[in-house]
Length: 426
Image (cartoon, rainbow, N blue to C red; front, side, top):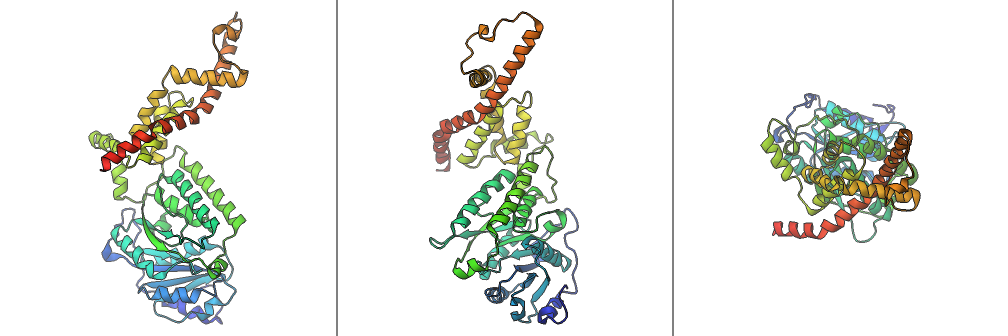
């Protein structure tokens, strides 16, 4: 405890279980419905107007509740009642939402809990909906459960709608998963995740980093619809800093995107059914081929897979196209078979010649019609000089042409693929 003994609420924090033990020490730990222990975590910072109501309603769910005080100075903690299922921890100075969640998860782990359900203290979330997360946890304990906020028709800040779309896109780039609401603070985690991962973020960017790294570590994701309340009170209770926190989130995404596309495997700590389905091995070639053939589950994935193959196939990667396409398609969870085969449309001579002509035109303002346009070549040195110029023009043209050909590919196959997928579904 970090509070002085004169503070009223310090005693509540001593109700932690005496039979605590670490349940997830091994990499292959199996979480079953029989050994699940769930803790609701409410990080708070100066939420005097909403904290008591949120806490009391969370206790009505029947699960233990931990309120983690991130250095509040408004006296909200003094109104919380003594309760045998309510625990209070925290510190005297504000250190950030991520730091509070990480410390709360460590407390949960040390006291034998297998999962935490996190909800904000600003009044936006309905604690009664925690049961939805419990049901999802019981269905798949090795998963992160995200609360998909069902926005009301009016009253939702434009920044919230934009922020969700922005975040969803970059999470897809980092993980290949198309999730509905990656900014929601209403979610559930296996406690073992916090023990395994190293996370540097300590503010609102923490929830992005732990989500992406959790997926990289092998956890599945589940999504459940939850209500959300926006009012003058809830907006006032939020402490999100538009400039500073958005800057931190952008920096975190930049680091995650760069890491995702480094040719270094993500370390897997969890073995889930979803991961087993996507696993390829030369030891089981028939099963691996079947998985490749059935990877795409929607017209959108097929189109993006084809565009990825064309884009990378056009780039001047010399003898590395197949490896690069396979790597990128795996990172983005695309259909690797489609992406790899689409590169054949970029094979010589058509696309390389087109790239050379594009680069020559950009640099010289005209097309290269005949060899005489290159000037008179009399010596080997002059030949190498011209070859170097042509190579540079080819590289420049390929880089410019790659996104254009990928876009053209997407436009050409859009309607046929949509129609094909519609026929398959019917």
